[in-house]
Length: 83
Image 1 (cartoon, rainbow, N blue to C red):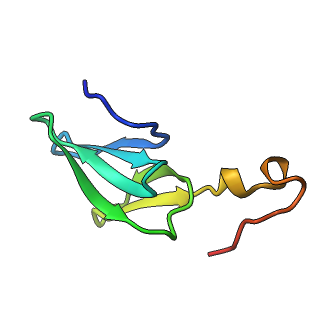
Image 2 (cartoon, rainbow, N blue to C red):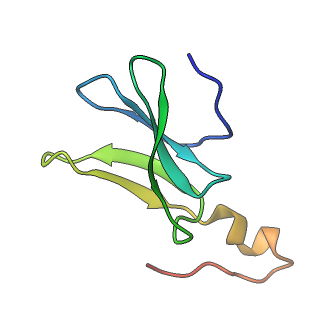
Image 3 (cartoon, helix red, strand yellow):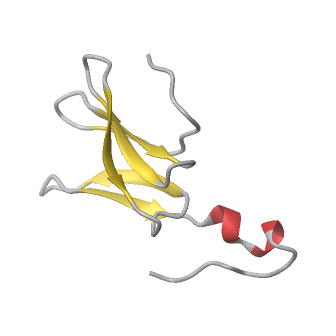
């Protein structure tokens, strides 16, 4: 258990690390088994990081949902950008 900011996606790896999105920081963080929270990656390109998966090669991937840029939240204007 840990105190975190708002998160959306969660994913455990085989070592017991819990990856979590950081919506406010446009980042991916990890909660280590010893309780430490560390920054994994941060970018202005991360716009509402969401669902995670760990591929067979061990790479962590996530969706970039951009929910806050949808027309319903921007007076009808779609501000999302494709990858």
